[in-house]
Image 1 (cartoon, rainbow, N blue to C red):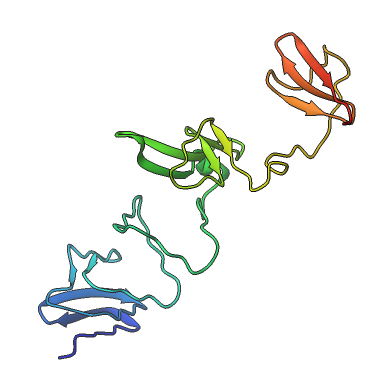
Image 2: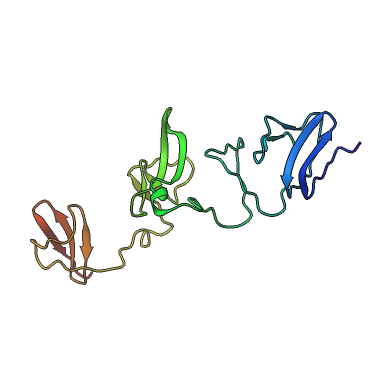
Length: 197
């Protein structure tokens, strides 16, 4: 018997090789190297099918996995196309705090998180380094290492506060126009002028 098996367009079929039993329904195709008991089922109850595959699995077409948690035990996940879509089929409410977490990224028991807030903004509990090299240590929560010193951070939209008591902005905000650089303090807006050189 060959070490390869293909299951196509099965409808409540039982396929055995050589001591393993796979119970499948619908359109399923499996192509892979089989050694010993490589495809097994546990507690099959229609329409749920439990299958364990201990070899390479090639799926041509869409793959849908239904369940609260899906675990992939691998070092690297490779995707040929460009997009990873989270909250697919969900709602605005279920998108809250969706994102990416690296378990134990900060310390043992504390993950590094990149999550969404209630209005879709990305929030993180760790710093972000831009264009840093491996081994560089962040010296600020946002640490930018541009190729050129003149193009590292840009505020595209100018703003001129009406005065120090202008209520727009929060403490720590900055703004600029053609004459001044502004920053918001607990006492209101302050400004500093520039000069040509």
